[in-house]
Image 1 (cartoon, rainbow, N blue to C red):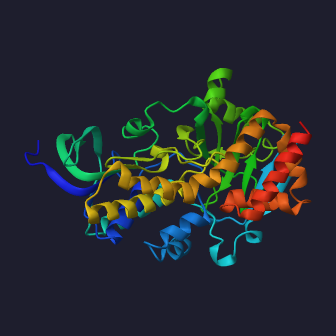
Image 2 (cartoon, rainbow, N blue to C red):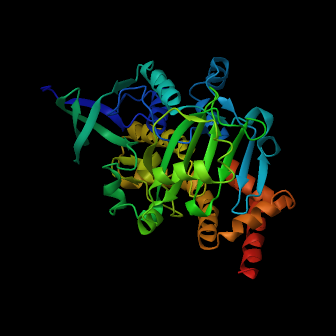
Image 3 (cartoon, one colour):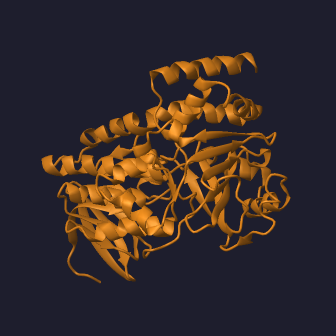
Amino acid sequence: MEQNKIDFDVIVCGAGPSGAVASLFLSQQGVRHLIIDQSVFPRAKVCGDGITPLCSTILQQVIPDVNNHFEEKGKVKRIKNIRIYGFNKNYADLKTADFVSEEKNLLYTISRFIFDDYLVQHVKQKQEATLWENTKLTGYSIGEDGVLLQVIKDGLPVEVSAKLIIAADGDRSIFRKRIFKTAIDRDQMVAAVRTYFKNVIPSGNNDLLEVYVFKEVMPGYFWIFPMADGTHNVGLGITSDVIQASKINLRKLLDELICNHPLLKERFKYAQKIHSIEGSGLPIMMEKAPKLSDTRILLTGDAGSLADPISGEGIGPGIVSGKYAALVAADAVKVSDFSAEFLQKYDFIMHDKITSAYENRIHLFDWFAKYPYRINWLIWALPKVGWIRNILANLTFGQMGFQDRKSFTSLKKLFKRNE
């Protein structure tokens, strides 16, 4: 056991995208910090493997050549279209170029095994950062002078202290319990499974994300995402309350859909599964103005349930929250104020950057869950009605502007008349 207590200005708990990005921005601000993770990188992570334009924009602020590096190494698959299938087997396409300028049209897929390790390797290069892998957090306490963490590092107990914690330790974060007080409701948790296949027959150009809204996976969806090495990330996710109520076996359902569904079985006729089916939980944000901070604690990513309630995207919100948690933490260190009142500005920033846009997504989630037929109607209308296409595109690629909000109100009225 180490005899001396180790002290840092900030400790980042978790070295996934949220934590790694927080670390990189802390280093940019000159803040001395520790970042810990129970894994040793590289490591696999259950995910759809999608990187949105927003992710790329923020990453470029701390790793200017990030996009060139990935494209030159052939590690990413550039995505140009999103195809959405309804219950009736019809589909509609969204072209990313129609909604995102060419220089910002940076929608990729990349394995989390590669992506997360890439970020961690950049963290290791920063003199302000100390990285402890293979380190499990076992407990913590908050006092007048700071936060004391108990960890097991390489099998040995260690105590380490800091002025402030950035919690990036996922949906099972021990810090979120201090702020949220209650466990995550099952209707606010998505359970997902995914695997990888080779020799899947492409659907048209192999540059599109495919989303299937089957009755069997509502509220949720089935996906097929192409990867840079020619394989496909294949998976599905459903809210946990429905899984429990209907006693759904997600792994069995995934195999059954691939083997039997008329939209899938021919495309997977010669496909080979090259990875075991793995699962994970994803907490989705269903609150309009959540509390994500408290005295000496900031929650990021899945620790703050920041995943998008419609798409289930977690990497983008995680990266955004990691950036702004680091900037608020740096401000707190400068003025030596770690009070709940001072750190509350992080909540305001997150509301402006993320959760304010979720209000309309939450409405859509509720509508589709209650009236699934609306999916088919939207897919029919998507190529024909410009303002509906704009709404769905902006829900996918960014925050909605004033005109989009007016159109969204019209959509609500239209749905209400048809209920």
